Image (cartoon, rainbow over all chains, first blue to last red; front, top):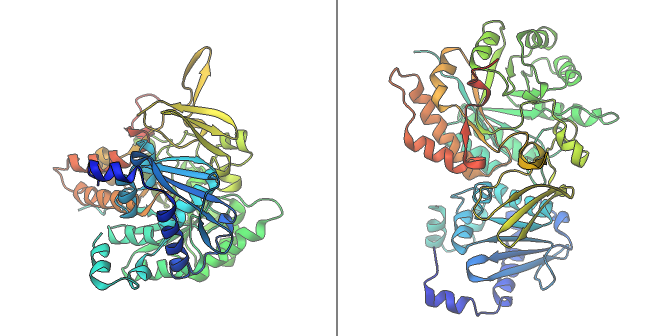
Length: 144
Length: 333
């Protein structure tokens, strides 16, 4: 998916804090359901940035050992991809190594934290998340 | 019709295991979250609860789960490896994949009913070595390192009662399997000792404009120009300056792909064909398993031909965008 030009024009000019705040809030909300066994000790004190390269925007998140926050510090690890490729990864249509080999996904900084994050998402069973959503929306996500 | 080889697929997580089973794997191989297996990467692999669920899932569909405990027990820490073998036995694994002779002896003595496979990391490339492990520890299967030609594989099969498993697809590493300590040269850690080649903690990708530098423990091992396909950050696949020329001094990043010789592998009596890639995501496992399943099912027929869509599917997920028959096809000896 590519944003239509006018939307992309607007997206490039929007502040980053509100979507990062929404993402942190959502993560805090679903954390215990999606990752009941995971203590995230390896993420404590780390800041992660997801850069959307085609929009020159992104979201920076940090984890203080208990909760996720919208971050402002320099990232320990940064992922970079187009919006379209993030969606491809979210839907598990391609694997991240494939996109990395093809230079569509970049990672910079603390590779070990980045790899741990990638492997956590790979190992995640998203079914408990669907139970929280309205049925039609959950079904359309499950279809992927 | 000749019996088809088992399709043995990798899983680094429960969703990957389910993807392998759902897409036609006969067998899935996995590892614990520790240094006892050769894919000891951050966040990868299974907790006991996840593995119990995975084994239940696979066995309920009449598929098998193999647990790789294929690193070498380190001095003073042998208990970790013994405990992993005990856990595999109590979880009901269909077999364990071992490399270390001491661990083979322990498993054979302690769990006489547990089936044993000799790992590729055991580096047994001749039938004498395989038969010795069979006589001493009762191994049922040996995974051949990717160093033998097709006639050599056939020669091994004809001289052993042990089932032979060969690699069918996946990233290829330098041809010294089970004996490679290149990673230790730069990081102090390598597959046999720490279960990991080029550990992520030592890897840095730094981007300068559109150029990407790969560093392993600070050592520049490769530089990718804009649009140039990237590979894993291993020393064997790096480009180095040798006598004023910079090139792949050891090997290029490539993937093994045996689709073209599947009928030959079946004819010579290979018992199982293995897909590399426990470090990859469920999307890779699904794609490769589906493709190999279709190809294997067709390979028993006299008019077998590699379908273009299989090649396209495997091309896409390959490291280095190049595929090779590796050592299987080698005119020289």
